[in-house]
Length: 428
Image (cartoon, rainbow, N blue to C red; front, side, top):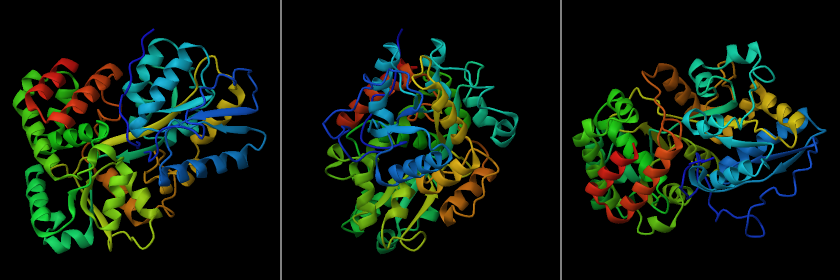
């Protein structure tokens, strides 16, 4: 069996970690001692270890423990940007027949290596009852059954095409983000920030490839259209050669305005610079807002704000997280209890406001979500399209995703547009 996955790093979500990806003893527990089938233990593998993300996950676990006090939760994180560390851990354990109880994964194409080998249980009857199916958005339900059977429980919806900014920095430079209407216009703004302030124009990391890959995706959509982007996802790279190259060229220009230590920082460390007033802009998923909510004296609209990435107004570029029920499950009863809870209003009302995401259920009260996420929810409802993402695994098969990660890892180092175009073409 071959499982191909992501090879990125640097903390996120999608997405988010600020540490080195190890446990207290320097390595993650591989679960080798947990194959006893003890149904009272629930081992969860996930990558949420950055500040706001970890807080959100803990809030989810608090609610689960309250509802299921008989289950002992074994929290076994695999930190790394955009799931970079979790993939190898899970692949090895699943192949060895020693999976955790459940693990975090993107729905959609990221599930297919597991569904192709019948390594995920059908939870269409045990978890997805009629009430849950009716409450979930139709498109999210579809992503949960890439091979026909329902195998995942999505818990959130993130937006990827955000351009966050420090209000004071852009005002000092005389830049109005609401007037930037194209990806080229953003480059002009970065040049102005660089000339008029001491701040870093774009808080961006290149330690791992996923941040540049997701930025390139949104440059492409902003320059072209969602229809062209979907054509790209379908594999017609050569028919869009000029468009692909144009987005790469502009990305190379952006990367002239990133931190000097971009190659050694994580996304959330770059975001710390925006919070401190040392950086102007950040292109990132809205998990970044969870970090702002946890910062002291850093208020939405007064100190920070966000506009859709220039050229993508009306687009809600979606990133979704879910949990699954692997076969050879060491704790089937506890796993079913957890998946049932993850799909409830209570779970998603606890988790999403802290995580910086909106719920995939349509009946979750928005009272506790704050002004920013309420606005995001309204944008989602009013959006013209909600395309999947390459960088976060919902839009392409894992083998393509892995090859594109390698391409953008090289691009981060050499800014070679020709080589990057060939890498993208060959990946598809």
